[in-house]
Length: 255
Ligand code: ADP
Ligand code: MG
Ligand code: MG
Image (cartoon, rainbow, N blue to C red; front, side):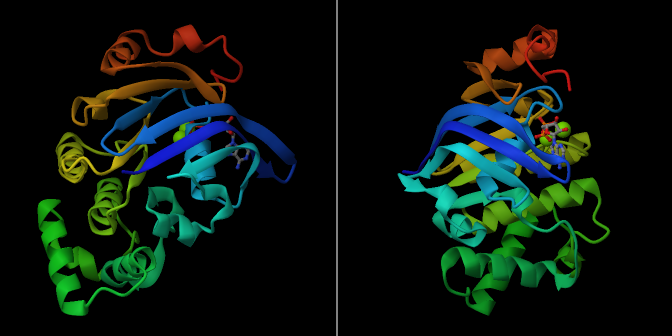
């Protein structure tokens, strides 16, 4: 059973004006079968945490560690992280003109599995996953994310989740840009994938809306580049009623 351990993680964003520390000591352990929600105000560093785990080149880890089943993730290339079982939606390019979804997904699956899936089997697998997610069959032949609506991009993320079967899935703002129906379909996709209890989910969100569909076991409040409070699902309810005002005094929480 997989375990992702983030220990005292400090990270900077690299900019032309120099580096700026964003993550200021993040501690979090996510185990297979658990769903953790990270909630926090805009600019608190939630996406930076996702990018840091993903190995995005614009972020520099200055101290701390990220371990997947005891293995140092920070020493791995982006591809190796995927092969180790980490899924991070944002490691994939936004638009890839000329590359069909179908080919893109097969390449991703090859990278993760270490060998190319047999074509006939693969076509069936993709079809079944697309049916589950209410995705139009023509979608498979379209270029990756080109001209996709917000909802289609998110369905695409969950399609990858269903096909790549990671051990730990980090979903950043999966609810943004979704209407009520799309939110339901996407949430059902995540829940279906979670149901066997073998994946750990880190769900990053600004709003409580998606947590009504995907029940978190743990809720963490993120402010000023670190986790400032942790609790159960009831914490999300309190945040819905109170917002993040009580954390506004924390450094950068209101950015
Ligand atoms: P969140 O996802 O919680 O809204 P982010 O991780 O996107 O927060 O951003 C955290 C902080 O890092 C913000 O203050 C943001 O302005 C800053 N930041 C993020 N990316 C960059 C960048 N490329 N250049 C400069 N500042 C950045
Ligand atoms: Mg933001
Ligand atoms: Mg963000």
